[in-house]
Amino acid sequence: MSASVESSWPNDRTKRKTCRRYNTPGDAHSLTFTCFQRHHFLSRDRACDWFIESLDAARKKHDFDLWAYVLMPEHVHVLIYPKPDDYSISAILADIKRPLRARRCNTFDLIRQIY
Image (cartoon, rainbow, N blue to C red; front, top):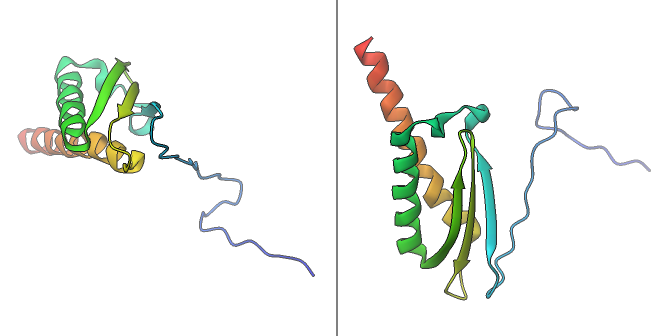
């Protein structure tokens, strides 16, 4: 008896990046993520300011201590310590990244309208 595996990807050789996140109370978390297609979106001061604003809003909403962050042109490193016992790293990441995506898309739409 053999098992078959269905792939939702057009090419079976394509691997989907999977990430397992653990929400263990009392643990600090090192988060690293890249910009879309490794574009250098964070090479501009305005984009870095947007990221810092988004990070601060997520910090207030999810009640975590921000121990450190590093902004590189195409990726970010963040070290956080969630204070509540019940938290979701996925929700924290979403609330950090979502406002940036919206601002970036709105900026590109505005540029397209001008030109």
